[in-house]
Each structure stands twice: as structure tokens, then as C-alpha cells.
Length: 256
Image (tube, rainbow, N blue to C red; front, side):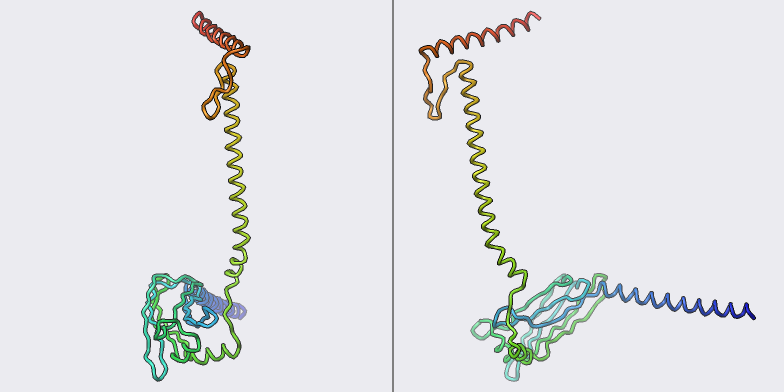
């Protein structure tokens, strides 16, 4: 009796373990699908204080590949629909694409109020694939553009630059000042180094010419000192000593 009970308990435990394993496998497959699944969402976004545009954003965890879409602007009762086709090879996670609304008759971008008056809905249909090749259909819409415009106006929703753009704009002037200062310092450093190298070379050359008894020449080509007087005798004596030293070395090498 006891053995039968233990066997039954073991069988029940085995079944529970199998069920838990199957459940965990399903959860892991679902998690894997979510980790590679792109999700394209359509929305309206303000691109200036008065103009709204259509934004398509990939809010999924995976990339959308071979995207083939059609954007449909459904006109009001007295207008005509506008259709645009768009294709792209890749939309990465978090990537955002913005499309301008249909232009006015005079070729200008309409204000959000005029856009909402002319078009009542926006729809995007098409297809794309995930990175493993699975095909996905897309059908996203902003069903009521006039309501979205009215709610934004009632809430006094205004356009504001992105925080990153504002920070970059604030940093642009200090960075320009720092860059100009560095350019000045580098220029001064180069000029000082050049002057120092030239002066050191000039002094070394002058000392060498003076040692061997040659006249020093200025930058404009004139002889800086004279060949007569006591200095001339000193130079000649120095030349003789140098010549004797070199001759002595040559004779020593020849005799060795």
C-alpha cells in the first residue's frame, strides 16, 4: 500500500514537472519573440509651434526589415484622399521617421488647425519582417485628427525642442570660445617653438662659424663682423689650430 502511494505521488510530481517545463518553454519562446519583435506605431508630433507632422516610430525591441508602407491621408467630405508610398530597408528599435502633411494649394506647409480641417484621419498600411524573416502586417491609424488637434489646443500643448537639442545649443557658445582659445594657444605655442628653434640654430651656427674662423652672416646676407684687426688674427690662429688638430689626427690614423 505504501509503495503504491509513493508511486502515485512520484507520477503526480513528474506530471507537474513536465507541465512546469512546458510552461517555461512557452514563456521562453514568447520572451524570445518579444526580443526580436518590431512594433511600428503611428502618431502626430509637433515639429514647430504651429505645424504637426506624422511620426512613425519603432517602439519594439527588434528591428523592422524590408518595410513597405503606404500612408493614406483621408480627406474631409469635400476633399480628396492623398496616398504616399514609402519603403526602407531597415528601421532600428527606437528609430523615428517623420513625414510632412500634404501641402496647401500655394505649396506651403499647413498649420495644424488647417491640416485637421482638411483631413479627418491618417492611416498607414503595409508589411515588414523581423530579423529572422517572419512577415508582419501593419495597419496603424490616427482615426480622428480634428479631435487630436482640438484636444491639443484646449490643453495648450505647445512645441518644445528636445532636451538634447537645447543642451547642445546652450553648450555651443562656450565650446566655440574654448575652441578659439585653444587655437590661439596652439598658434602662439607653434610660433614660440619656431622662434626658439630658429634662434637656437642661429646661435649654434654662429658659434660654430666663429670657432672655425668664418665670418658671421646676417639674415639679409651681410657679413656681421670684419676680417681685420685683432679679431682677424685670432680667427687665423684658430683656423691654424683646427687645421693642425685635424692633420694630426689624420697622421695618427695613417701611422697606426
